[in-house]
Length: 181
Length: 353
Image (cartoon, rainbow over all chains, first blue to last red; front, side):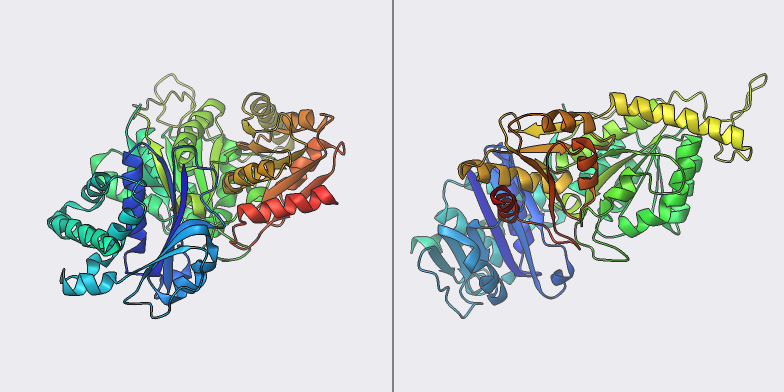
């Protein structure tokens, strides 16, 4: 199995940490992972992204042309990455921020109003990325176990933020429910 | 073996240096390498090494010269423009035969250039870099794991040959995270009778210098150095082969571009094209003999060197192939990373022509 993914959005939306938590969770399950951030000047105020590969075999290139799954949290990222999703691949987009719908018909698209849920139901827009991750885990449910993601949260968050773990967990659950509905 | 962690290449390099018994780090921050000094600064209170942010790369390299001369296990890390500034000191260190470790987390040049990954410092790394006839032992890691392994190996080879060694890495490997297995820490006990640690009564004075004003002495020093380089060339060549046994086309690639090329090899095989990858792990000493062996194989049609520069290692490949087979080149410059598909297209274009 090899899953090639990209997470993209504005700097500050939590795309890099979303990718990190997923990569960490997969590593905890004994898989090989690579996480490659964009670290160029585009990070300041513009879009940030990270490419994450998860595989049970050795990962050759950390850089790929096309993605099994793209997660986009802003319009420039939708424009940039929609065309690079593999046929029958998955595109997850944040539908309360992005007002344009994806155009492609040969991929599966999921509009997730994660920002709205984070603001209205969780009263903290910072966990928006965890709502998206919850949805992702529901859509691609054999990628990593939810317990591994919770473990990843615990081990990657600095201790001083550990009181936020229950909120993040709730965000993951709500995100998952958005897909079920 | 030690812990499994998810780490950035730069952090892994720093952690490996600590575990390998680092005693002194002297450096100056520069993107995309700064995590090394940040990590070492954060960990410093728990360990016994000296960490010093120098006023410039010129100062840092000379601190390395001094501390390394006193027998300490020392390292500096930088990125391209910083490595250029260090060249004078490195030439002195090579002549005075001081073991120490450099890492160049290469970014696109020339000039101040870009902060994006590149391999355009290959010439500088493998041909000496500064003035005079010398080489560094140059390891080219292509994963976060090798950023760890090559620190251990680099320190070891530096001590073994009393020579500066270096990691020729790049911004992408420095910034990306992968799973790493960290080796157990070692207790470093330097065995360096030549080091300037203070003359004891009745003992000859240890003297480290790169100044030999009499040409006869200078030539003698050069002969000694060349004999050492020859020994390194004989004993320390390292490389990796991937599906080269039956290959008609050989991609030669190092560092990050070898990772991307590996995927291109698989894509080519799926398309029915017999491509293999030859990856120098030591770019100096260069695995020229092995490449010559492969060039002599009947089924091999051509070589193509894939690099993130304007074509530098391709010259060493050509020297090794020595006209037996065509040697082509494909590369991207200025911080642009080629995609696996792009490399495949370049290979296919040559295979049709």
